[in-house]
Image (tube, helix red, strand yellow):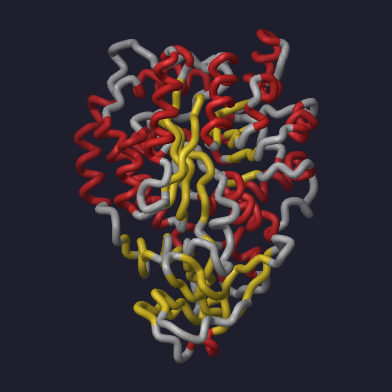
Length: 453
């Protein structure tokens, strides 16, 4: 807790809430009757409501009966894929990709990308997500939507080796041009799709570019055990060993999924000299019948595991609250240990670990002075969240995305009292509906790539 400065009006003061805070070791705690003071897009103080009684502010929010949390972070998604939500269900991954998703993605237009991204941003704002990491196509369009919506994002333009040198060059050009856009809310990554679609030479060149330009790399790797088995059969190396061989573990890298990480991969990851993180989206793994990300093993070697949803085409929602709940429950089930993951540990993954995963560990992920003012308010008054004996358990196992009332990014209110302020959802839905017949037409017989997992 810090006292507010004694002079000067604030931009925003939130009072009467119960604030989720971290101690110096990153452990979760709660401050009752808390006040959060915002100036210049950053948190200026986290104190008590009586301490700010006389403080002038341009805007005040009375948050009695609500919890204040750092904004949630979706560490791996494909926002435009909301246009494919529920289109291909109950299929193994190879059919899902080869017969449905990759033929349909050959029909993508910038207009569809923009409309899908806009609808995704609305969904995430409503669910208390303030930052997301996206890895897709036509990413300049997604960047425009981020700027309009007010969200924070790390964006990467995906490429395959089948595109030749132009694919990698375009990913770099996008990353350099959009880095720092939207008033600094956009950070960027290089985005090779995966080791099975990007060859070793392209991966090694990507690592060199990342090192030269100070960029993170965001890619899929060891998505499931079938991919790992195929990699071992064809190349004699796991996907993680491929990343090591090509230098990608010696730069900052965000690995999506990792459910196919083997025990032999753990010392390889531990020896990497870059800032390595993994994004886990458990709902999709349950749907595809995959194993889950080895969260405990990764945590034991100091690898942050952030929460994610993947795209809505596979996950159906962009609900990070659900990802947090499922992460806790699936880890208990797979480890046969009810004491792992605890509710506080799950909140740690949702906050500071997710911030570190997207390369913003010093900027977001906690309610503390100097951090960006990315804040969500959660209504605790519903019958499904009462009574509150343990607030951590209530947030992880009882609260829902629909309990979020207010979403704030950089001190700007994007949703207040459940009313979206930056995205026109009905208009976006109408426009997207008109594009769907052409989008889902697979009669051309083309695919953007071949899935080998």
